Length: 403
Ligand SMILES: Cc1cc2nc3c(=O)[nH]c(=O)nc-3n(C[C@H](O)[C@H](O)[C@H](O)COP(=O)(O)O)c2cc1C
Image: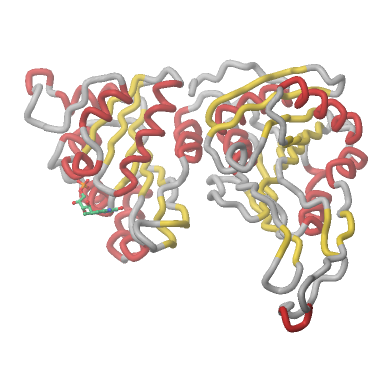
């Protein structure tokens, strides 16, 4: 596909590099149009190198080919990432004062806008009205998310992750609706077991891979329910979400939702243990003295429970994150775990303190009930998600919109 990526002048401009790289790696023809302000943040050579194409910003160069009309008419989709409050206002007003806004006006292609700005700018009545106007005209707004902003600020206004933007693009332009009519239940994130009202036993799972599975399934037409435990990434549009904290809550939500699902993907990282009796007030050093012993008891094995209660025809998919780098050892442990749990599929990946959990990329092996490898995938978490879905739903492996 031919995708025009408009980049506007915010701190998050550098994140557009990752989006463009994923699109180019996916085989798309990407034309980047940075605004003058965007070039104050990231220079022209970066955009040309990453898109592997000549990049123009000026309306009055290449006039003979009427570039803005050519770019606009030739686009299958226009993605603006990040979108500043200023450009959102210009688009809402229908202004055409630079190459990007001229291109948007000269195009009938779907427009996807990924805003990024400070919370106050995002919540300003002017921005709200501009967003409402653009939405009414059919533009798709993806994000913003909540999290770290420029400097020490944090709040609503952060550019959403690359995989969320790509899923939105896919949802808009994809002709691959092969999971329409399929109901997928996904768990993602990491559970927290309370020690007292302010402390907990948790894990490093960010929820990225589970959220990417939810996003990819949604983009392919599935009806998706996400059981979310402390996600560090925003939930994709169109996905029904149930927020949970402790393993027991995760289990209850999954058990309640399981009967209505065709596929259950258990991607959440669940604490194996919980504190036997959590204190109902904050434990202080005065109470404990030099040492504090916590009495831990095992949590139920949720995956095994789901396998036991799975209705006829439902596929249950587990995840095994192991701290081993050797593929043979990973496979050996994965096969043993699949045996113990009885899952129809197990997705294996190697994790460590510095890889696996919070990265945008992942590398997995999927085994089936016989322990045979049915898929291997490496890349951004969204394309890995697509491969996992291909394997567990038995669908074709070539997407209509390659990433
Ligand atoms: C350091 C810095 C960071 C900025 N970050 C943002 C931002 O994240 N979002 C935003 O809407 N504007 C941001 N601005 C303001 C825009 O750069 C400014 O509104 C500019 O006119 C946008 O032009 P454009 O929309 O044509 O790219 C920032 C400005 C500076 C100096």
